[in-house]
Image (spheres, rainbow, N blue to C red):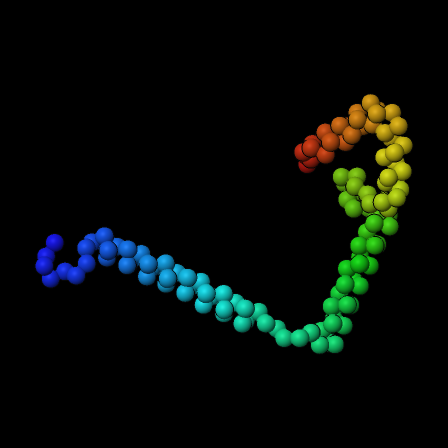
Length: 119
């Protein structure tokens, strides 16, 4: 170590580490501040509230239709959509005999895993 040096190598490393950590925190702080500033969309006005209410109504009606109506999903695979209440009735009826219900479930699983051949 020379006589002109004011600090040891260990002290220089500690100071560099301190400023590195401080700089990292400052960078993260600035990025967080920018994110909060950009994300501020202001108050929701009546027009925006009406758009959201309309979108929510469309989503709910589509969901209600999906759980209460019959539909052919994929005729080739034999997929059909039933109302949830009817599906529960069918499952309860099939599983009155647990062994038969399990066998039918495994059969359906095996059929779903078959690869379709177009040859």
